[in-house]
Image: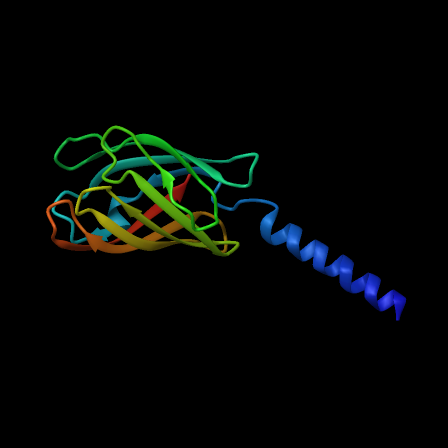
Length: 157
């Protein structure tokens, strides 16, 4: 009985380390316009996200890019996978609040919004099994109050 309990505890510990030990999103991700689609009136023209794991188990994102109208899409923000709102104040980002929850090792759900504005979106990030592609699906309301949806594909660099 004791041997079975020890084996179960070791198996559980190994599984937990595998699921929560390494963040599969920690990498540099480049927007792939050819594989992406959107109903936005001002879609992403270019975007590179550098995602780094933080000591507290969260993620720091440093974004550089541009929307098709030429406005910058850049900034730095951090979040944890606890579903609590974090601030995201930066040049050109359409949102100033973000909350993220981990669904499994390769999938997260998120919500972003602009305080006092109309912009709001919810979505999911899914990293492919081979770890080379991040697909981000979202739907929400633009800053102008119009509905929009997108599927943005990012390639690992």
